[in-house]
Image 1 (cartoon, rainbow, N blue to C red):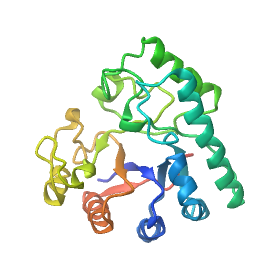
Image 2 (image 1 turned 90 degrees about the vertical axis):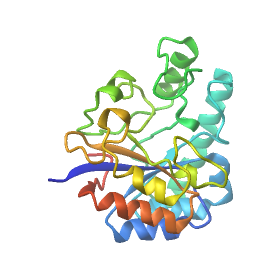
Image 3 (image 1 turned 180 degrees about the vertical axis):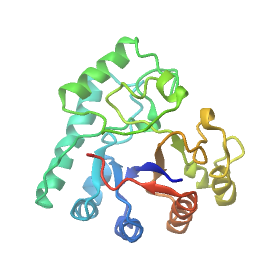
Image 4 (image 1 turned 60 degrees about the vertical axis):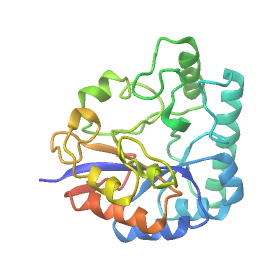
Length: 242
């Protein structure tokens, strides 16, 4: 019995984005690429290519700012400046931007409590959600997400996109280790873990997934992680609209 997953990829675009897009397309996978505005300015053609191939370009701020440490005015500028750049990419691709999706850098929704412990009653957090609403951002229809921890964290109600499975692929960066994840073998081994209410539920048939990866990890590791996830009889949804 398979379950569905939505693939989200942060810190895009990269110089080799086309190779990653082509690999995903060969597997029948479409992703949301959460893009930084400064990277879109550096690699505009790669973003256009992703759109032409049916992938979605999301907003990941202009320069990966920590939204818990900047003012609401600065936050609005980060969002709106990148929004305009994304609009330009869709125009170049002669495509309609059917949905506007946003992920906070560091998955920090504006609270000092960081991810999974956001204080939604915090005025700064409320202000950020208000800005997202005013600028037309919303969550796609992620179906079948049924983790108690996810709902308790408020991720089913907020306007930004969070995740249910963190690939920990950023631990592939030199010198980075977190909870014992430090290289490709340990990152791949995480996929086999079965702790559904601890954010490691790929082997749990009772909930679909929102998977988070990063666009800058080595291409071979990128392919290996995707292939290992697919070995779990997980089917990636081809569209975020339905």
